[in-house]
Image (tube, rainbow, N blue to C red; front, side):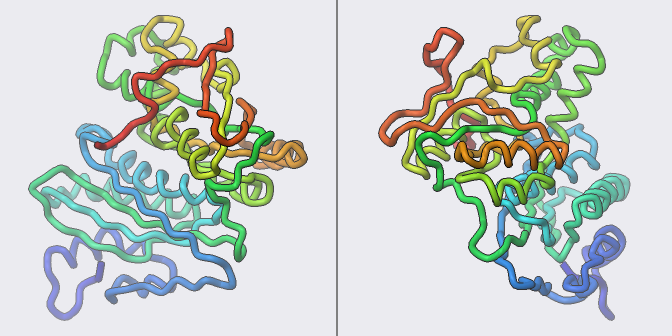
Amino acid sequence: MSAPGPVSSGEDDLIARYFRPLAHDPGALGLIDDAAILQANGADVVVTVDAVVEGVHFLPDDPPQSIARKALRVNLSDLAAKGARPAGFVLALALRRADERWLAAFARGLGDDSVAFNCPLLGGDTVSTPGPLTISITAFGRVPTGQMARRSGARSGDHIAVTGTIGDAAAGLRVLRDASLGARLSPPDRELLIGRYREPQPRVALASAVRSCASAAMDVSDGLAGDLGKLCAASGVGAEVSAAAVPLSDAVRALLAAGGVHLADLLSGGDDYEILCTVPPVRWETFVRLAAGAGIPVTRIGVVTEAGEMPRIVDEAGERIAFARNSFSHF
C-alpha cells in the first residue's frame, strides 16, 4: 500500500484519500514505501491474520463501518487471547469497484477503531476482484518475552472460564436471516444480537490478566463446543463443562424461551469473539479481580480433566449434549 508518487494511479489516489490518514504510526512511513517498520521494543511480536468475506462473515447489506470494525476486531480478539497488546495492522482490501461513499464510511469505521484500540494502520494492498468483497487484516501485538498465552498449557484441575456471553452473534445472524425470529424479540434485544454479530467486542483490556493467570487461552471464533475441543487437543487434556453455567445474555434467553433457537446451536455457532481460558485454582481469585478491574465479566463454566477423556458439555441432568456440528467450518 503506497501513496501517490510523481505518477499516480487510481489505486494510489484511493489509498491517499481513505487510508493514508489512518497511518499515523511513524513506522508506516506515510504509506509511501512498500513496507513498514515495526519495532519489537524488547518484547515478542505476536502475529495473527484473519480474512472476512462477503456472504460468509458479513452480509452484503451490512453497514461498511461495521464491516471495517469486524475485520479489525476479529484480529484484536486473537491478540487479546494471547495476552498481547495491539501494535499495528496491515490491510488487504479486494473490491469489486471503488464506491466512494462505501469507502469513506469503511475508512471512518476502521480509523475510529484503530484509535480506540491503539492499533494503527501500517500498510497493505488494494486490488480489484470479480468475486465477493474480501478484507484480510494481519495484526501485530507485543508481549513480554516468552509470556504469550498458548492453547497448550491447560492441566487437569484447572478452571475453565469464558468472558462475556456466548451465543449472541450466532443468534444475531439468525435474526438477520429470518425476520420472523426478530419479531419474537423486543427491539432492544433484537438490536443487541445484531450488533454482537456485526461488531464483536475484543477483550483487549483483559490481555494482561490472561498473560499472568491463564494456563491456556484462545478466542471463541468458531463456536464454544468446537474451540474447547481445539484447546483440549493442543493441551492433551479433557474437559467437562456445564451448559447451565455458560453465560447467556437476556436477549438470547428471550429467544430461547420463544423457541427461536436451540442452545446446542448457540454453543457451536461461532462469531462470539470472547476469550476461552483455563486458570489454575491458585490463580483464580486474582484472575477474577483483574477482570473486574478491567470491567470484563468472566464466568467459570467447567473443569479440565485428565488426558484421554473427550471434552463434554453436559445438561442439568449430567448428560452429554449432542451437537449436529461442534463448530463452524469453512470446509
